[in-house]
Length: 123
Image (cartoon, rainbow, N blue to C red):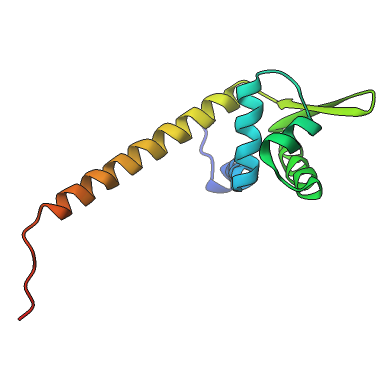
């Protein structure tokens, strides 16, 4: 098996990091969740209504997602429709939500355990 240096792996890690950077904004996650829930190409007008993101900002967020190939768009007449570029993006959102729920559940359990400790008395 040929030896590969860490430098050979760097571009892939950079691509992955850039993907996560593209996802690293609440507005973009919201857009992706809407697109995932709709399961079909969604017009920008509907994204604006559902997300309540200002049009210029939504345009910028969609551009970031498109640049990183997370979404794709298609113009139909005067409307632009967006959809997830790959079905696995929905799975990624589900995994992230599950991770978050598990993490919050663990914190809740820790807080419960903390509240069951005997009171600390100042001396």
